[in-house]
Image (cartoon, rainbow, N blue to C red; front, side):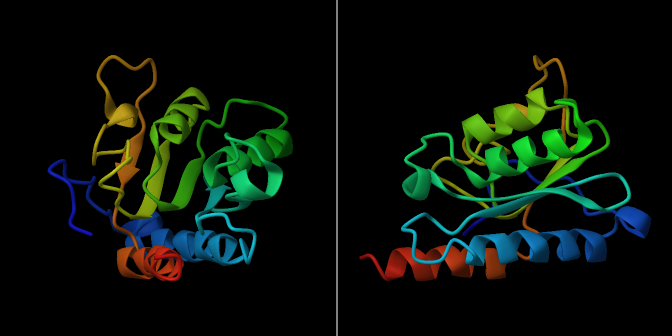
Length: 167
């Protein structure tokens, strides 16, 4: 996939460097692969705290649970909220294999995460820079850092294989 017109935030070095983001996306990829034969699109997500500890894991469960809100990001955010005992996920990062849609980007903003890190761009429904840019909208009450394209090829390959088998 080609990157959108809106460039992602630079991938900083140091403690929050690309190696750390890569490791987090690998965790999200594991969740995407766990979708299995449910019929759900293989998207996975994790929420990590400021130390990098995973607080929530999620994968798409829309087909499995007949839930229109059963996106990987929403599942991971809910689990992280339960782990912290709060809906406010300050200091946390939402990490996902595919650029979040409008619902999931909005959920990240409302959960007050510090950043969204994702792998593959979604030029059809992406809301973190491709089609829309909700986390960085100047009108938002909370702005979220966005880091896109982390392990992009690996994440995109999961989707290409899934949809290739269905066409």
